[in-house]
Amino acid sequence: MNTCRGVYILGFTLQFKVLVSDPLAEEGVAILRETCDVDVRTDLTEEQLIEAIKDYDAILVRSGTQVTTEVIEAGEKLKFIGRAGAGVDNIDTEAATRRGIPVANAPSGNTLAATEHTIAMMCSLARNIPQATASLKKKEWKRSKFMGVELNEKTLGIVGLGRIGREIAKRAQAMEMKIVGFDPFVTKEHAAQIGVELMEVDDLVKVADFITVHTPLTPETTHLINAERIATMKDGVRMINCARGGIIDEQAMYDGLVSGKIAGAALDVFESEPPFESPLLALDNVIVTPHLGASTVEAQKNVAVSVAKQCLAVFAGEPAKYA
Ligand code: NAD
Ligand code: MLT
Image (tube, rainbow, N blue to C red; front, side, top):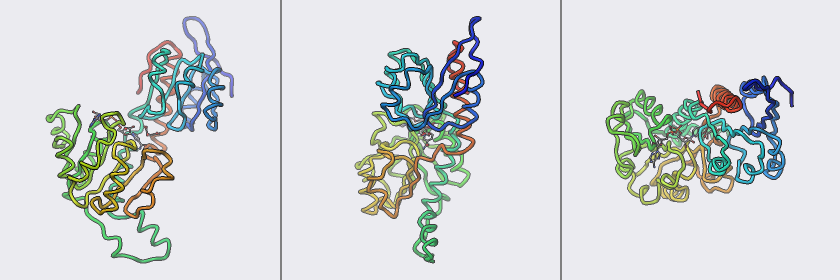
């Protein structure tokens, strides 16, 4: 804890206390420390958090802390909930709204990190790089076992043409892939401008060699890629999920990977995290990372600075506006 100058508002200097309950880049914490008392406590259980939150004016989280109804209701002084990242799935936004507490995220700060991770996963999947690395480190030299496929002239299906989906389209075109996309909130004209042929999801799954999903997890997108749609895919399709676990039905994907319908999958996110009980981890044609999409130095700095600034804006009586 440190004691600082306080936030000057309407002729008064107010002292605010901020709880940072997940690891947040130091650049964001430093901005808060200039004017607020900041405690970084990343090891609180939910019960400890419910007890501790009473003292704080704001809480800043990444994806680890569950900001539940109970936490929000216990936060008598809470004026701001900040999410250093895009998805607010770990925050009960309805409970916050009921109490009039603004919830702010930093949706664009990690867009390029997640985009580059997706491209890295797609390339690794096409060329079996993680499996080949593990094999060679066991002192094996199996060149024919790890025969790959090229991305050149393959069709990439992008489900969700928002910030990340569009950046992926741009980069995949540089690798001479043909891009098809599905997004009910994007027009055909706009899609065409970014080099994407827009189509219905049922058509996309039939023509794509690689399918990558980039939507939020909502009731409409939960199991959007399900057993019925997988059955209509090309044999040997490859799938990537660096968005949210549950957009692709994991059981259906597992069945497709075991039967050979799906040649491989690259997963950064899971229906339950960490996915230690998932049978997907045992499959050789599945490559995985532990929700690393946003884990770059640059992205973590961006999102931390963004939520810190939004927190101070709210303390000063202004709206939270992400930069
Ligand atoms: P975004 O809001 O910019 O884009 C999401 C797109 O999905 C929008 O264009 C929207 O129209 C579309 N969409 C909504 N409902 C849809 C539906 N039913 N069918 C098809 N499309 C639909 O979000 P973004 O910043 O591009 O992020 C995409 C996803 O990636 C989010 O789930 C986000 O939480 C996740 N994400 C993950 C990581 C990671 O660490 N793995 C990092 C950043 C973001
Ligand atoms: C996000 O929603 O921003 C990502 O999943 C990354 C994260 O949780 O930090």
